[in-house]
Image 1 (cartoon, rainbow, N blue to C red):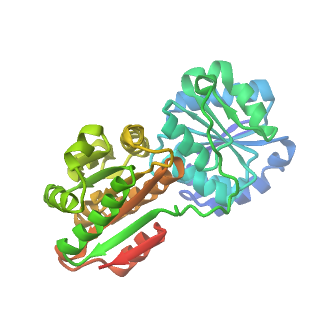
Image 2: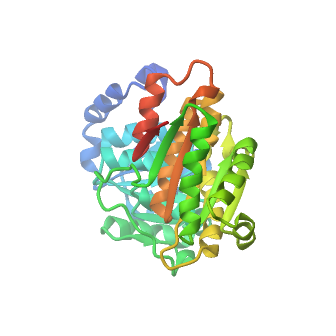
Length: 362
């Protein structure tokens, strides 16, 4: 983190600030000759690649004649600085250490709702851009187009307008309408099951109802549960072979799915959104009817929890909320409580419940 005005001051200098003491930082800003008061605007630039971060700072300072630019290199610092400074504008990357840009934007949107957030990221998939707007962004610029679009984007979002780069022309991205809008999705439920019989009963009804209505279904489960589900769906009156051939029924191994988006033991938001976004798009295209939806059952969160990675499981659940904001999907997450020695601790249980619109126990 750095504060830039007439000179550059490293905020992480232990001799000056006592290792990330933000009350000290706040006091310094008041003490430094009212440096913030001299600025027409406070800007926070967040990117973990220092040369690119310096490029953004230099461009803003040269063209907009800013006196106060604060820098941060990870998502947690960005959130804390936003809470202290309430900057008018934040330039925010997505691939950040400690806390990804999407989650950082969501927290900043709640703590500093008047701050404008402009994403500047190398990610250019439609799913990721939509997730950025869901998190409270006012604009999105792809890094390779900074030279032609950055200043236009900055001016637009500061005027209260939304900016989307030219490469996204034709895409109608929705935006977060209110900082107090609940982050919980209406159709994202969790089930805690005492045995496989109850789990498969619920999943059969959940998936079977969708397929019978002409919608599509994606099952991300263990091999035993995927195999046990097929005859039950047949008995439910469904031609599963036809649904598979049509592309309306997609079955994936939960452990394999996790391996595609887990990085260093935690879910990577960009990889997660790409993985599920592509498959939901495929299933949606195969579904029948104008009101067709996609039902998604997943137990990758159970595998993470069973491995002692409760925090990773909760972050996956939060990313699931992004999916239901972006797509017409219903999600059921399955936890096989009996299969894990000692069960689930109360704190983890409460946090998992808080990430869902409804919770069932069978």
